[in-house]
Amino acid sequence: MPKDILEKVPSWVERFLLPNLEERIRTIVKTEVDRVMEFQKAISAVDTRLAVLENNPLTIAFRAFNVQKASEILVSLEKKMGGNPLTPDELRLRREFTTKLDTGIITPDEARQLRNILDKELEEARDKNDFLAILAILFLLGLIIAILSRR
Image (tube, rainbow, N blue to C red):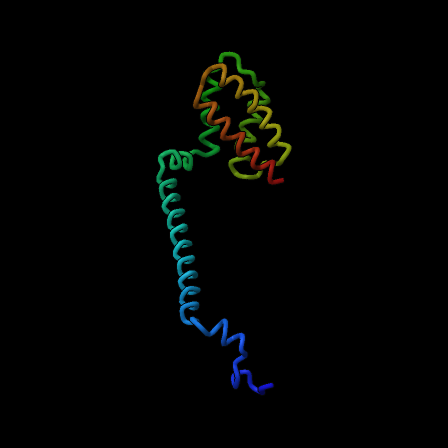
C-alpha cells in the first residue's frame, strides 16, 4: 500500500474518473452556471411583475385608502340612510372602534363588536346599493379579520 495516495492513483480512478475529466468538470460548471442564470431570470421576472403591480392604479388607490377614509364614507352612509339600523350607541362605538383600528390599539373584543356593527351596516349599504360604502365596510371587515386571525 502506498504511503501517499498521490504516489499511485487507484485503478478505478484511472479507469472511471480521469478519462474525460476536463470535459466532466466543464459540464458540471456549465450546469451550475445555467442554474444560476435561470434563477436570475426568475428573479428578474418577479421584479418585473412586482413593478407592474406597484404601478397599477388600483394598487396605488388602495394604498391611499385607509381606515379614516373608510370611516368617513360610513359617516356619509349614515346621512343617506333614512332609518339607520344602528342605535346611537352602536354609531358611537363604531366611530370609537374605527379610530382604535386606525391607531392599531383595538382589542379582540372590540374588533368583534365592530365586526357585528359593520355586518349590520353592510346589509343596509347593500339595500341602498351604495357601492362605495360596501367597499369601505368590506375593507374594514378585512382589517378586523386580519387582526383577529393574528391573535
